[in-house]
Length: 99
Image (cartoon, rainbow, N blue to C red; front, side):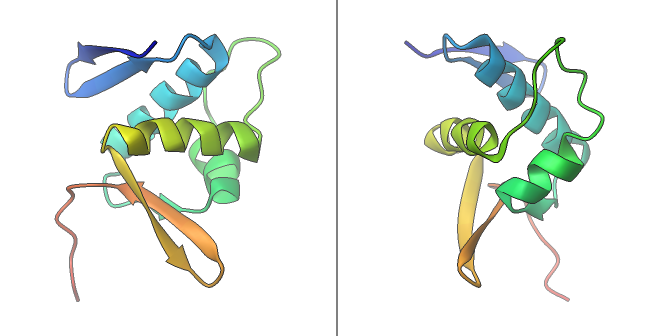
């Protein structure tokens, strides 16, 4: 079951998995502060979530990050671009510079 709640300009998704919910929220928070950001699942786990205030014992594996990104993708909040055999994840609907 997926319930959506509005939280300011950030919509939070409840997946029923507290760890996944925390990752979704952390990625949304990062993108709200850095709307032009884009990275791989590994880069997101290592850099975007570096200072993530996670509950004790939680970590951000690339598998968990991928699940959170796929949840956000299903809701049209992020998109994945295929680049060099990998995926680059970024926010959707952001007007980007072309220069």
